[in-house]
Image (cartoon, rainbow, N blue to C red; front, top):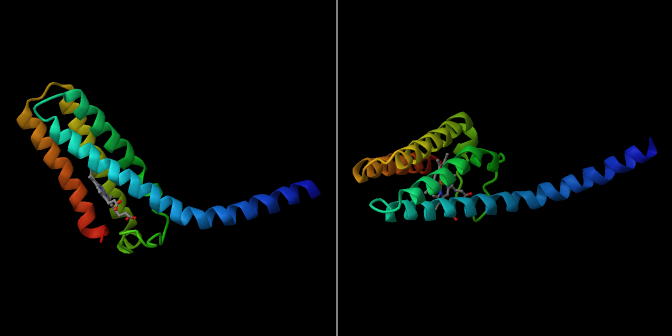
Length: 142
Ligand code: HEC
């Protein structure tokens, strides 16, 4: 019994430290992931008339992040240098819906790329995807 309590105290203390570091850690991590998104968008654009396997790969990377991103927004994590707006937590269901729309558009683009769609269809897919990034930034990013 005593041992259990000791373990609990240790893990509880660890939890406190982690929560504190986590506030910075999670913001840094999501900013890094969003930067990767930007690189993916560039790579997709550069390959519109080129290698569609790169388009599919990068679109799937965007989709993967879109399905996790809301977990990287613990309530109130707006500490500098974050550009996240408090509106996120006032409308968290809507914020999640924007992330879902982003995931769907990215998945659709990957499907197009894998089905041998032409450049014009791929360009439209990229535009649709870009719109879902902007839709979220307009309301939830500084
Ligand atoms: C559901 C909302 C949402 C979606 C969808 C979304 N973003 Fe963001 N994005 C944010 C928020 C919120 C921030 C600010 C994060 C922070 O600074 O803590 C951000 C930040 C960024 C940044 C700045 C990162 C930095 O280091 O300052 C870039 C670049 C970015 N997003 C690109 C994209 C691209 C490209 C897409 C689409 C493929 C996208 N985002 C989709 C909400 C979203």
